[in-house]
Structure formats: structure tokens, C-alpha cells
Image (cartoon, rainbow, N blue to C red):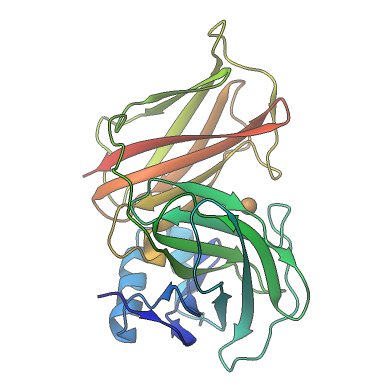
Length: 296
Ligand SMILES: [Cu+2]
């Protein structure tokens, strides 16, 4: 059960590893508590984490979560209008952490997803000092949202903290008609997802290849621009209720793919339905191509 509280709550669950890790959260009114049992919560995190990547695994034994994110949001958020969010990063005693390392060109990456995975936003909060980040967000429709904040306390490993926000109102009908299509056309660019194996298997490394063609002449494009320092960025979420940090995967593009291709090597921790959002830049504009995949 979700609870909606008017006080501040902090849930913590742990795990860290380079490139992924976990959590905490809290918030004021409209911020939901997620699981209220800390034991269950950390179990979810660690079980989902296992398949994340072998490299990450090796670091788990000697790492401990030392940070938490506290979200402050206005009490009643209306859909589809800018809202200011404040995220405070603290150590487990509540003391602000004030130094962060830049990675992928930013101090914090914030992925905002409606819990049914229908909407996606990738924004970059501004650091105001003393552990405080601020950002203007826009929740397009009523519903429950998960906010995955990705940051790197100075000299430490990357941490992902999960926060949740509820936007009151009636939830729009899902638009699932395009589910599982492998080609998306975004203005003048066509993106095609291909996977080497017929079935994607949980826990196995898989290469996801995104072919990027010009929608007009159908030729592989040669004018891909780096986005946040890489060929592309891929965020993957497992369709789950509730969403937890273990459902979140942020994959990094391979460096040396040929023209018109953006490739990622990753693994899906568990069988299920996942949504992928692949972002890339062309003509100084960032586009997001989304796909659903089934993992067996
Ligand atoms: Cu980012």
C-alpha cells in the first residue's frame, strides 16, 4: 500500500556500485512512502541489482550507502505546469553533503517517469550549494511518478536515489497500441531497435543496437552529435508496481560504433516487460526513442 503523508519521511535502502546503486527518499506532502518495511525494501533493491552487471557486483561487498535524497515538493501539484522541486542530498545522519563530482557533464541527472512507464523526462537539477539541488519539473498528467536521481558524492561511487510524487486527478487511458514495435520515426529521424538474440534472456549480457537513419532518404545518418559526452544515453525500466531502484538501469553507449548506429551492452536482471528510452542528439536537438521489450 502506498501512503501519502504530509510530514517528511525518509526511507533508506542500500547498495552502491559504480554506475548504479541505490537509495532513499522522502518528501513532504504528495510524496509517497513506497514500501514502509525497510527490510523488504532493501531486499527488493539487492535482488534486482544482481543482474545489473558483473562489474558492479564485485564492489558490493564492501560498500555501504552513505547518502539519502530528500525531496521537497509543493503540496498540491497540478498537471502540466512547471513546478519547483528541491532535492537535498544528505548523509545518513541528515548532514548535507556538499561536494559532488561531474559525470556525463552534469552534477545530477534526474529521470522522471510515470509509474506505468508512459512518460519520461530527463532533466538536470541545478546545484545551489550545501547539498541542495533545484529543478523545474513538469508532470504532464495525473498519476504516480518515480524520480530517479543519479549523482556522485565527491570521490565516491555513483548513487541512485528514488523519490516518488503523486499528481492528483484522473489518470489517462494507457496508449499501448505501439507496444513492441521496433521502429520509431521522430521528426526527420528513423530509429530501429535490433537485438542479436531472438529472445532476450534475463541475467545475460545483451547488445542492443539502435540503427539511426534519415527518415527522408533512409540512409544511415553521419551527423550524430555527442549528447552529454556520449553517442547516446539509454535508460531502461522494468514495468513493476511499485517501481524500485532495482528496476532502473542506465546503460552507456559503446564508443566505437559505426555511422548511424548507437549500441549498448547491458543485461536485464529479471524476466518481465521493460521500457527503453534511448536519447541522442542530431541538428542540436535531443530526441528520445522509446521501445518496449520482453525479457524471458
Ligand atoms: Cu542527465
